[in-house]
Image (tube, rainbow, N blue to C red):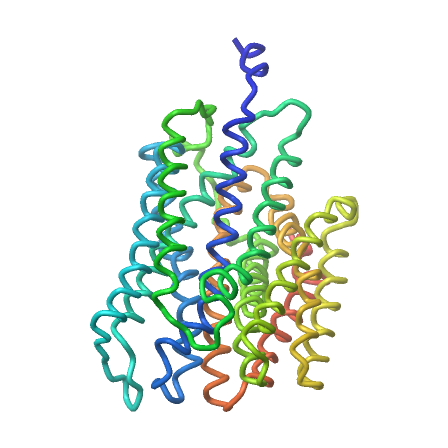
Length: 415
């Protein structure tokens, strides 16, 4: 029986998982790239709150990772990986539908509400709910897709290679996303028409629906021994491992600074007078640097994680410092290459030596992803308070400094 299982070719399911992982990267960055155009469409009367409310779009998306991470794990335990995957796609269609509803409400009714001196359309709040729902779908997909990438054996590949291929797909679509928003949805126009998103998002909903239907037609491998059962009683808390606890904070800062640069570089550039197309190009090149770094990441796989993190945090930090002193947003583009290999370095350092606590440690690290919600949002608040973006990049510098600390000190195992 076991030898027969190993002969099964899961190329079809593997390709499906790569498509889903690519979809995660695409929609995650698309949500971020809506900050600048929606600031013009929805928040022209928001006054001093315009940057705060713009970055709240990204906050809502990543907040789902914190609030729905536990729910997704329980759903896998209750209904299994496959059913959770299909349900995640259904949730995604709902979230995309809310984006459509937001545009429709704004075009047809344009109802406004007051927040202090600011006037904000109801459509903005509908879009926020849509961001959270799409973020929830991404959370569910992430919980399911990674185990399937390991389980879907394909001739001539290892599980690591399959995850690398999926990661490259994710980064490729993340790189394309800024240009898709600027050039396809809004067609490079400075005058934003929110109705421009009707057709692109309708097409995305159809594509996601087709993927969901196809999942009911293809054979997916069983992933045994990974759901909750009568687990061994663990003697101590996972938080008793100091290098893991500090690793969760490192993930918080890493995801936070990665998203802060990728999401807010548009707003920063446009505040300096750059055209939306140029600002989108900066975001494109930043995510492109992430892609290039991940494609070549396998060449540094034998270099210890703490060395990788030391070099990349110093490199990223110096570029951000240079951008602050020169007021040049183009310098932030190069940060993407350094950010590209930080995640695996932090992850491997944080779970090193955990033994039977490894699975729970991996789950704990997912809590740090909420940094992608908090740091960009705090930066937006600071931009409004300071009347500009330049000095707000100090937040990113602090994040890079913590990552350097974790590489040199915090990652050392004390037990």
